[in-house]
Amino acid sequence: MKIQGAKKVHYDSGPNMTPLVDVVMVILIFLMLAGSFVSAEHFLVSNLPVVQSGAGGEQLPPGFIPDEPIDIRVDNNPTTGVMVATTGKIQTSDPAALTQQLRAMRVKLNATGKSDDKLQVKIGPAKNVKYKDLVAVYEAALNAGYKKVAFATSH
Amino acid sequence: MRRHRMPDVKEGNVNVTPLIDIVMCLIIFFMLVAKIGIDTGADQAIVIPTSFQGLAIQDMGNTLTLNVRAVAGSDQPMVSALVGGVVEELKLVDPVTGHKPLLATLKNFRLGKDLKQGGANENADNPEFKVIIRGDESMGYQFLEPVLITCAEARVKNVNFNTKRATQ
Image 1 (cartoon, helix red, strand yellow):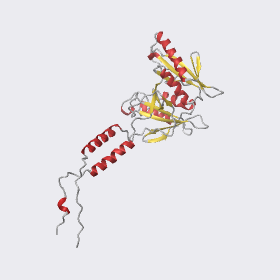
Image 2 (cartoon, chains in turn orange, red; image 1 turned 45 degrees about the vertical axis):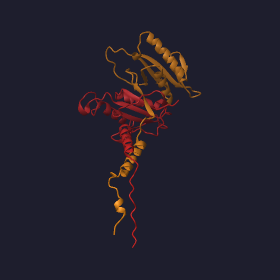
Image 3 (cartoon, chains in turn cyan, green; image 1 turned 60 degrees about the vertical axis):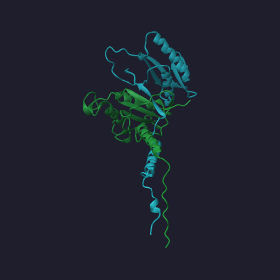
Image 4 (cartoon, chains in turn cyan, orange; image 1 turned 45 degrees about the horizontal axis):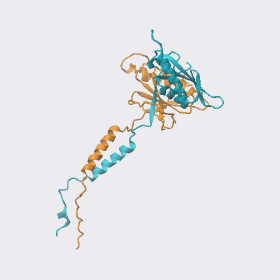
C-alpha cells in the first residue's frame, strides 16, 4: 500500500528557518529591553581648587600664581528657607540673575587681562543649604562661562 | 482499513532572508551599543538633583560612585559605594575602631595599596581616578562637606556630581 502524502514532500525548499528566526527575535527583544542606551543622567564636573583652604587642599608649588577667586556665598533665608546667593554686590535667589551677575563679573575680569583659565568660582555654602540649591548655583556659574567651579570647605 | 492521509507539506512562499538580514543587523547594533550588566553601585533610590548642564563620562572604569544620604539626628552622612563587587557602607569615621573606611578606600584607589604617593605596580598612583557623588537633592551641605574633605585628603582632584537631565 502506498502512502500518497510522502510523494509530495519538497526537498528543495532549503533549511527550515523558523527556529532561527524565533531565537533571533528573542535575542533582539532581550537586547532592546535590557539595554540602556541614552542615559537620563549626566555629571557636573568639578576639578577641585588648588588652594589650601579649599576642598583641593594641595600644597601650592613654589612660584604658583593662584587663580582669581570669585566667591559665592550661599545661605538660606531664615524666614522663608529659600536659598540666597551673594556675590559681588548682588544678593539673589534667582539662578538666572546670578548667572547674569557672574557673567558681567567675568567680562570685567577678562577686560583686565584675566583669562577664563585663571578664574575660579568658589561656592561657599552654609551648612543647611540644600544640595539641589547648590547644584543650581553651580550650574549658574557654568552658564556664566566659568571653567573652574568648586565648593569651598571650612577646613 | 482506512488510513489517515498525511497532510501535504506546503512549500513556504514567504522569503524570510531579508527579515533575517535586518534582524541580524539590529542585533549587532544593540550588542555594540547597549550597556548590559554594568554596575557602578549607584543607588537608584536616591533622588538626585536636576540640571541642564552636564557631561557624560565615557569611561566609568576608573571611577567610584559614592551614594551620599542624610542621616536623621546625625551630622554625618551615610556613604555607600561598590567596593570589591559589593555595595558597602563606608563610614567617615568608625565610632568603635576610630578607622576612616571612606578615606582608606579613596586612598586605595587614588594612591595604590600603600596609601602613599609614589610607588609602582600595585602601589602606583592613579591621578586620573574620578569620584562621582550621587547625593540626595534634599540633604544639607553639612552632609556633603565631609565627603568633599575626605576626597581632598585622599588627593582626589576630579569630583563629579551626578544629576538628572532637566527637560524644558
